[in-house]
Image (cartoon, rainbow, N blue to C red):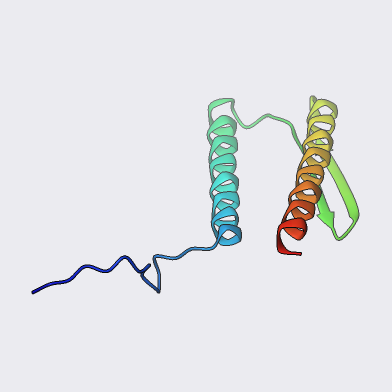
Length: 98
């Protein structure tokens, strides 16, 4: 006879939360790149770009095009919000662990 157990399976079915967040981040980046490429093709190749890259604690802000000022401002705001959320979640996880 077959017996069922209520033990969790080991192996590939168990995915940690940080890994799933990493995969979600890559998927969001891929979707953003696809949207940018489609927009550039449909608009004839003219457009604006702006962004923020963090290398350690140092932000590098860049932008090009006629609307780059707004894109840079939005990128900086999103970067600050993301950094704030990261700090909140790490503080919460430290409280739970310790």
